[in-house]
Length: 194
Image (cartoon, rainbow, N blue to C red; front, side, top):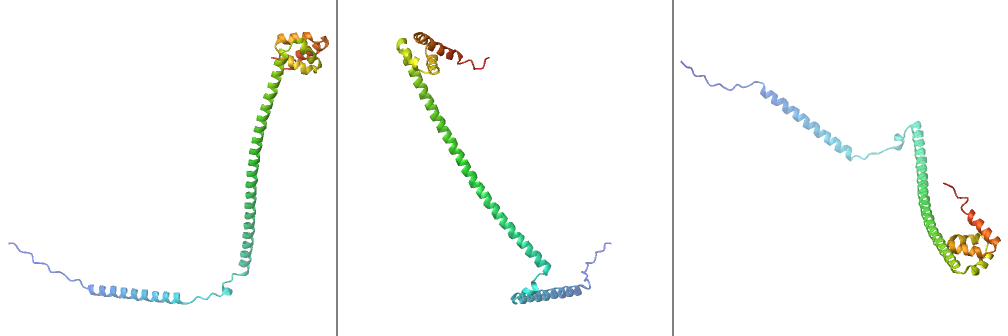
């Protein structure tokens, strides 16, 4: 025998209506409070705020401290401006010094080039004179070398070919030839040895 199960009936829970009423009351209370808060904010936003400086003044000790801090800030700002001015002056002076150094280096280079040119020209002149004295007959060149200072004459003879220098020395007076020979021999005596 089978018995069919009887269909179940939905049960109603009791107290459900009371819960809905309580939730509705809370929601209504919250909405009212929000509405009153918004109205209060709107009222204070529209109201003009009057500030009385006397009521906002800090106490005397705080005012003195604030004044001292203000003076210190002013001194620091002045010192900072002074340091900025000094840094700017140093920067300008440094740039001027760099420019002067560059000018001096350029002048030194020009002077070195001029001296090199002058040395080369003098060397060319001495080489020409030496070649000219070598080309002269010893009896014609001897009177010239007699008139020259011995060290000057030794300079020319030291540059001449040995055969031309020997012929010229032979044509000179013995005393002059000896003096020039001593100078030629002693030229490299002061040079460091090996």
